[in-house]
Amino acid sequence: MFNHSIEDNAAAALSECRGAHKEDIATAKERMPDDQLVYDLSDLFKVLSDSTRLKILWSIENKELCVCCISEVVGMSVSAVSHQLKTLKQANLITSKREGKNIYYSLNDEHVKTILETTLEHMLE
Image 1: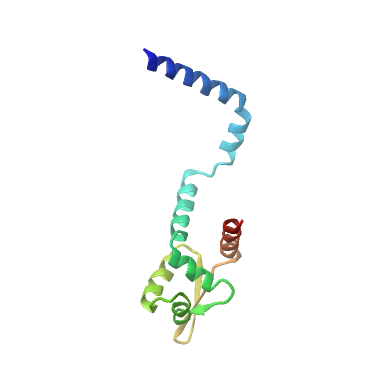
Image 2: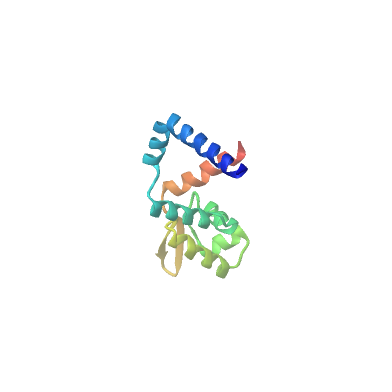
């Protein structure tokens, strides 16, 4: 009996809150991206959650580099870096171009650089 009363009170409070903030709720729902986009965004954050991949992105933030140079910057084997580059490329965060025997990697666009810089700025606040 007691639990029923608590549930009734909670339901009444929720109803009152929804009524008082109806416009705020409607605006938030309108601005909410569709589910597929939210899932894709979540996947992007998963790719960015790896410290090795972040180091790779920072290494090519201002200038394209080949895998040998990237491996030297991040202190990992060429093979390990290549594996991470594949993941970053699949996530559309980097691009590559071939010049002779070498492949050079760079950030895909300014948005990726902005994500890195803005996140770092937030962390340093």
